[in-house]
Image (tube, rainbow, N blue to C red; front, side, top):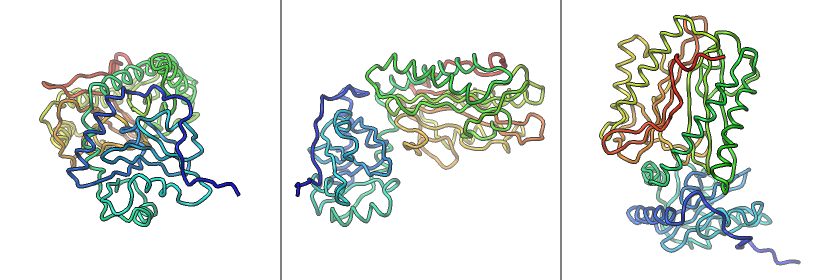
Length: 402
């Protein structure tokens, strides 16, 4: 019988060009090791897409298989399934181990080969399942385990110059998708066809500017009529009608880095009741952007916008927070929950953070001005204020189309 290994190293081909230079990953890992030391962890076992990609550059596709990044004082190693062959090594900074699936839990045996047993292990309590946590205990027999999810999130919330440069490109690509969508809007067109026009324009531009990247996950939510009432409503085959409210949402993904453009639009014309709600939301948007400065708190900004809307008897139509962070995240990669504009987040804004302003008002069907109104810009917090890196215009003057 052939002796089949539990895991092995497969260096197939040469290392690919990653989203950032080696120095960026080295700096991230050096900061991580300082945080691990402060927490008392001898080794970190990361399992989330966002942390594995943040520290190694490798963005995994799980498909029911577990993945990991193990970081110790001297090593940084991705743990990947055999189905990916040499891709994890080519697309990651540092080393890579491939585990085989002929025997259950070779994944944990591969991790144990790096961490050993009896150590203090850092992990992500907000990601590791109860089943896998039990296996961590069984295979690694740690002295204790320490949650590193908060400290790593705090690290990711502060962007490097290289990250901000990539996010800036993402915002520019999102605008390109927005213009393509605007050109495609017409009575009788389907949501899905308009969404594809925006997506295709963005992916074409991403491939042009980032020829060495891997391309996946760029998407569009283009919503019309009743379908605008929720921010995350999926695209449908509904055909646009004269006077429809529209919600344009473009999301380019560049090597896991998420950016967005979101705009309210109308087909052909806008009635007076809808125009009043739209203009009020634009005013809240502009007011909110003016508040995003160093020293402001997420809760404080939220309270001020709440008061702005309450004075106009519109606060009851608000459906969620006013903004969130940007970086290595998306609707299923993960999220930096500590940088969201909500009443229960007390984070202080600091230079180098990147955050959106995106107030939304939803008026129920059957009421004057029915529909969902949302504007969205991406802002980089600077030493003395902010920089808006979204260029696509908002408001009625530009966005009554078709």
